[in-house]
Image (cartoon, rainbow, N blue to C red; front, side):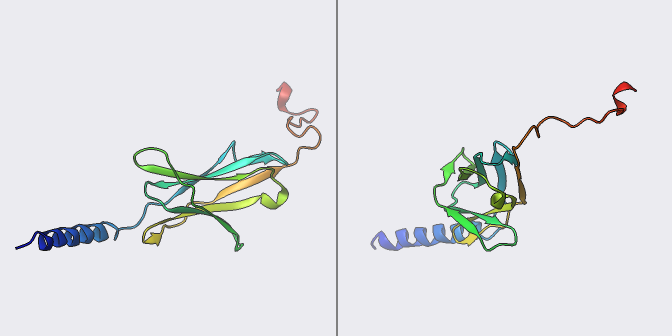
Length: 140
């Protein structure tokens, strides 16, 4: 008897175990922004999507729009996590809004992440300093 039937049986059992392991739900991805979610007009921001190891691609989506970007340049962060980065070199008012991530890990797409609210802040004048009113609670 040749060793081929045994090898074929081993391959079938391994494939069946892999398919069974993929039946459960995929973990939800997370989304974050560097350096933060409030960005001065014209400054850069990087949106980061994170998910489990083995992700083929991440997709960044905008709320209420049919706009999305896919990123196949997925980095492994450690033994259990991977990440893709989406950079905006110079934010404008058009970039403000809600973003979320989804990823593809064979054979299907994950659930969506929570939304991230990207706020673009005007930089004209002295908007960073707090506004104080005369006769406020400062002397109480």
